[in-house]
Image 1 (cartoon, rainbow, N blue to C red):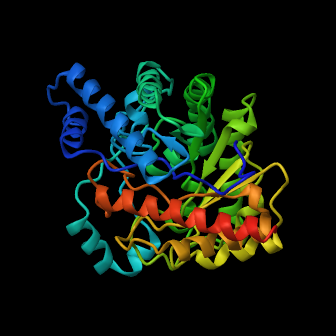
Image 2 (cartoon, helix red, strand yellow; image 1 turned 90 degrees about the vertical axis):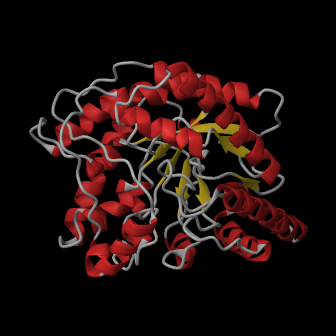
Length: 383
């Protein structure tokens, strides 16, 4: 992981809006419609190149492929792993059960979101072609472009468990470890290609209000510990300084009043084998939680990637507000261990974003300008 040794570096959490024509191709492929594979790959390649160009133009230092090839940040695993042919699991979050009118509003205005078939057989990573194409597309997009680093996101085992039915493995642990054994193939390929690996772990926080809302906190924490254990199994042997982990409470504009506090999970999350920790810190439910790091010190070998831009609203944040958010974290954990980021992705699912592409990149530009202001404040003050 690069550190902010001379200025506050910028990044985001991976996914970016896909062009409409690419979205149509991705859903056609998922629906089993006949498409030209070569045409799809060519369109993904140009979309990745454009996404990288726009990230650089916005001032982002550590860029991604925007997950242009994926129909969803975790749903893509059904195309790369064997064993998925069952019924999908509906999304049930406790906050939306309390406020069904919000759920209805989201369904009416959010567009189509992909689902993931349930697990009905043994899981194996059957073909590295897709991840190798992701690697090749990002490499091509980076030629002649000046960036500090580049990363590729991948789903965590626990994330897949949370969004899928399992009718094959006799226990959650066995299902998690089967996914961990399979997904480590993808993790290794990304790191060996020279990129940073971001593992998306929304299950860490969402597990509380999606699966364990009515359970005691200790039961949720035991499950979280199991998910961390399985992820560390998948990451074993990989360099921690090439790994960043993203957690969020769900990238949807719900009420989020059931979100688990960061302090109730942070000790377990910090046990993950990875140097970077990406968290939500800009939205109205979690912005105050920067203070948690006054109580739970960030380990010396960790780098924090706090969200300083909300990804669920079309407000373009004022750079001075962004700078204030960055400075708060820098004064608690040290400026060199802060990389300014976003709360979550702008394109979690293809065609299911709340923020149009032009606004998303304008928000990233505000992030970069805020980082410049924070740099001026932090380095001129010598703090």
